Structures are given as C-alpha cells and as structure tokens.
Image 1: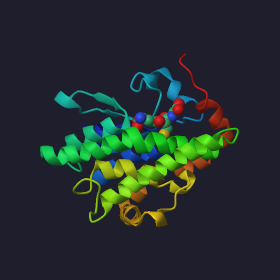
Image 2: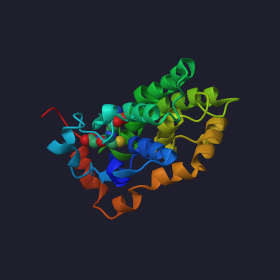
Image 3: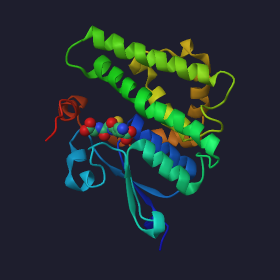
Length: 233
Ligand SMILES: N[C@@H](CCC(=O)N[C@@H](CS)C(=O)NCC(=O)O)C(=O)O
C-alpha cells in the first residue's frame, strides 16, 4: 500500500473550524488529502458528505486506517482533534490529569469561544441590517472570553501544559480577532501566545490551505445566501 493510500481524507473549507484540523495535520506531518467542501455553494448538503457529517458542517475526516485497521469517519472538529491526538499520541497527553486540562480548554473553545466569536462575525460582518444589541452582546462576550484566556496564559506558555490541541482549537478563532471587534493590545498574555503560534511554520501552512483557491471563486454575497437562514429540511 502506498503512503497516499493511507492518507487521511480531510473535508475542509478555510475557516476557523477547518484550520484547527489542518494545523494539527501539518504539526503531525502525516499524509492527508484535502477535499474542499465549498460551503458557499452548498456542497455541505450533498448526500455523500451528509453520510459522514450529518450536521452539514465541515470539517470532517475519513481515516482509512481507523481502529482495527478499518476506515472510520469523524465529524465535529473537537472530536477530530481528540481522535488524531490519540491516534498519533501527540499534542494530547495520555496522563489523565494532563488530558483533563486539555479537554477543559478544548471544550471551552467548542462551547464558548467558537460559537460566540461566530455570532460576533455574523452580526458585525454579515447580518443584512445592523442590530446594535446583538453586536454589543457578542462583541462583549468575546471580549470576556479573551479576558479568560489572557488570565489563563499569564505566566504560562500554553493553555493546558505543553502545546496541545487546545491551543490549536483556540488559535483559529483568535486569528480573525479584528472581525470580532477585539484589540490584542488589551490582552498582552493572549497576544504573546497568539504570536508564538503564528510563528510556527505548521500553523502558518495550516491556515494557508485553500485560501488561494477560495479567492478564485464567486462573491461572498452568494455564499451568504446559502449559509444563512437554514432550517430543518
Ligand atoms: N461544531 C462544529 C462547527 C462547524 C461549523 O460551524 N462549520 C461551518 C464553517 S466554520 C460550516 O461548515 N458551515 C456550513 C453551513 O453552515 O451550512 C465543529 O466544530 O466542527
């Protein structure tokens, strides 16, 4: 079997949730193949994608060499990070106390920073009308969450022990901080952490994947029609 046959299939679009996984795969240096899921053109609703990601969200992966040597698919970026961290025994400690530390900050990102920053992006950049209450609500909540990270990072290099999947998960959401109305100068320890990660070649590579490709495609306005206003169907 060639190396390519063992490649992890990544279903991806260049966004904060996608970057978490490209950053980890680049850090691990394992073979993977990018399958673009153009969420602005509705590719996340294709039956073949829904079969592995029933929430019609990317990222998702298929690992041809899953448990027992059989293929496995995984959706939800946090679950993907944990799966790959366990499989390759890197960036996700095996010691239970250390792992609980990582899990706390990973879940904090999944349940807090990501959704709140996503809403801040929505109301600040994409909503068809200005809704001052919503803009303030999500901008302030992201500001509070940045404060939590800043306090956590005082006197420590990373969020949970050594550099881990928790840092990778949060990084993608701090990267577009300006679109969330945040100034990293207000959060010196967070800024130091952010700059440390930004300087890592694997992080830079992970965040570049798909950027040029996306630029060759249509207008963001068309994408918004696909993305916003979804209901159960
Ligand atoms: N909790 C999910 C969220 C994933 C998510 O929201 N992905 C967005 C892009 S960042 C998406 O695929 N959107 C497609 C859609 O809204 O239909 C995860 O972390 O994997």
